Length: 291
Image 1 (tube, rainbow, N blue to C red):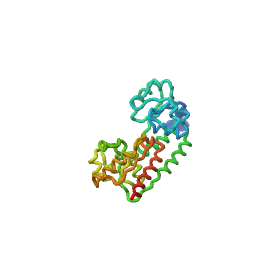
Image 2: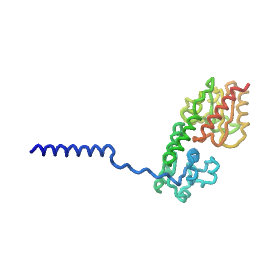
Image 3: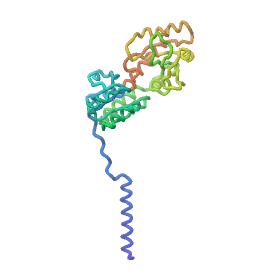
Image 4: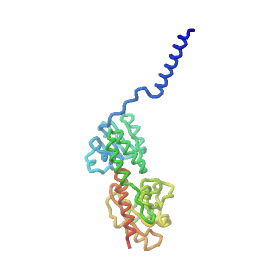
């Protein structure tokens, strides 16, 4: 074989190798990005609130029965709840995107069969809520607005330790006059994390569940400095604090101070958590100021 033939063969091999390397390194055309969704549904209140906070309210065509903020949601079609989603209503609305929680798996499967795109997000922890907001902003084409919302979020949730590291019990489900079977916030929840940012100790930080149901005896054993009843619905809040005051007359193991923090935002993991953060701080501080 001639020198020319050998050289030609060499360059053919080298060229073929370079082509293969180029393909492996991504010279192929990437898949097109999905177009911004124009007809969005969400059942979870926290997701709905994030959509409106991102300026996407005009694209929301349906919300869950328990969504109450902002006031504009009252004019949106109601789609049911976690266990009773109204698929026939959803079908009529012809959404092009549904944003769901992992717990809404049954609905996800149903929507997948209908050809509706589903974006699944998590919102149990502060980091997950922050990620949820960013993910929705990116998918819906409002990245710049998302950055503004998230910067405001981070500033509002900056650590603000309270002196003395008070031990706080957060009740998330209790009727006035009833001191048994109290639902409390355990470890790893966004409520537990808010207490941590305040330098407070969660009285049930070592509980085996995220939201354990506990009795009066276990509550007394924890010897909390402060108890805060979180109430999402209107009610007689004086009776709630009176329960703890009466308990203090019976045992010195009862919490020294009780407060109620109320509103439709207190149990919703969404963009209004900074408001709850401020209210928890004010409630704990007010206990320290009492005579």
